[in-house]
Length: 231
Image 1 (tube, rainbow, N blue to C red):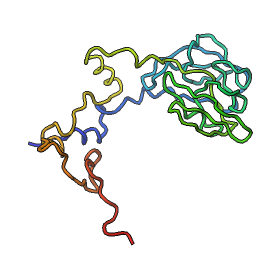
Image 2: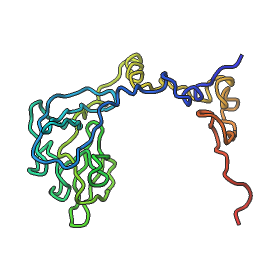
Image 3: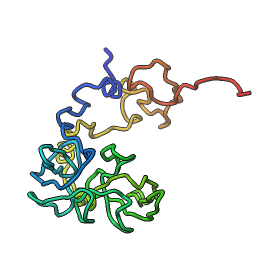
Image 4: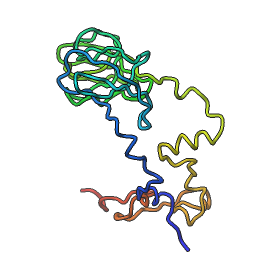
């Protein structure tokens, strides 16, 4: 009797392999038309993020941003004024070598870049037409001068430094995020469990999946869009 192979079960998207939607209830975003100042109400441990999430009260509204290093509850943060950790300013108002995070892709989108724990970008060059940031990947990226960002470094920098001493700990870490662990190499499972299974000769088969194959069944070589010599 056959059974569903692992990658097909994952492709189906059951609760076993899908993160709960509840962990994404905190959207990290800078609101539009920010003025004045806000106050840090409390910190939230969000399962969907690798950093502590700060809940900010601005007038009668509430929004969430990644907490910066050394942030405390009750702290005031301002919008568009002083260059200080936690303040939200436009890139054109920041001096060179300022560290920033939660950088917008285009003015007003709320912040798309630099959102994971312990990361930051550095203002490399600043001109009237563009601002260049040195990203965590060590590449230079150009931005619109009116793009907003949060000054500082995201908290949670040492999360990867603590060693995981036993497999049970990693199991529970992965389980909270609905990740498959431990992951067995396709060539090391039985032939019934994967198209590459059994590993005779330890070489994956040159298998081309069908074009209409179900999610998870497209393993091996991708079906070509056309055949024959291109003219």
